[in-house]
Image 1 (cartoon, rainbow, N blue to C red):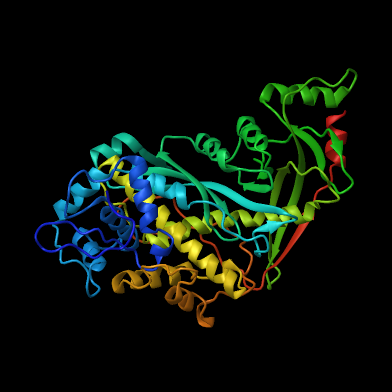
Image 2: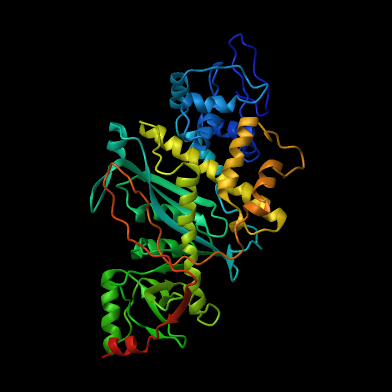
Length: 484
């Protein structure tokens, strides 16, 4: 069995070396943790090899850091530092070692490092004692092979079929730190709703879950609310729940129910001649707001928001603050940008041609991303800096340098610092401004040149010095309409 320390490599007589590292990220992904995961999944090598299981795990993680390199290039940076093992495996040997390892150890390793990392006083992670989290779904491009096509299927858009198969990834993100609390992956044909239902396993009382219109359906809302977490979701414009009780702040109480129960409630609100029907649903409070963006030249654009929340107390949880808080949902999109662009590389496709290898590669990306976020949050907490000000790009770039130089591969007793990465990401020139401008337009996929057909992007004109106002719509007119 691979030992948990960091022993030197064996002699050149054919014995394998047990070393393995990921630079300063090794302080999060420790050798003892990797060994425990290998033992749990039964992937410890049964005989002496030049590429033992622990080394292969670190090799897969290094593939996430150096996605632009081939197998031999990734191996070269792992053994670039002086004193590293003089082992020179072929690309075929590295590929076979990955296949022997499988995706199970990387999946379990992600389970060990995932989770919320914000302290109780971390800025942007809490609102009125509730930890703000968000979930969303995205697609990860994988190699265009027969195995991947059979498993994933292809995504179809208005301009045709996407050129590559895609794995659907749904993640639960901590808003303040953009750390991954949980993630679920599957074929693109798997519905977002079914993946989010699995993510409910990580929701807990004391969380406030933000979600966009993609999270729909009474079954999903019921599953999320049953965990004890509070909800703040956006509703589709064509879905208007009945007004059961109008509140003084312009919001109203209603229920999230199935279609049949919703019709019964609407009939009851029109007449109220009988006792209220016995309805199985989730009690909600509906907020309708208008977001107006006024530019310096006087032009204005308005967007309507219809939100529902399980926070029913209109005095303790003001509607205007909730409507403004919903903006934090974009932190999930920012997390995906960090994973798919900053770490993986813009428009880069996962290299694996077999489905299990592709899942292994994706779990490696998730592990490295989470480790980088943990180090960034730890650095910010020690320096008293909000995690949102710390650049993930600087963290990843510095982590790559520590892999090449084999810096910080050992955690000294009582030492929590990762000096090289901490110094880099806390440099005043690398910190983001304390107050970033509010996002007023959805993200666009910028593909000026592409061999495949993609949905056209809207031509958005920047709005400098924009003034944003929130207007809460009253429920009086709606109540009168439903009761006529």
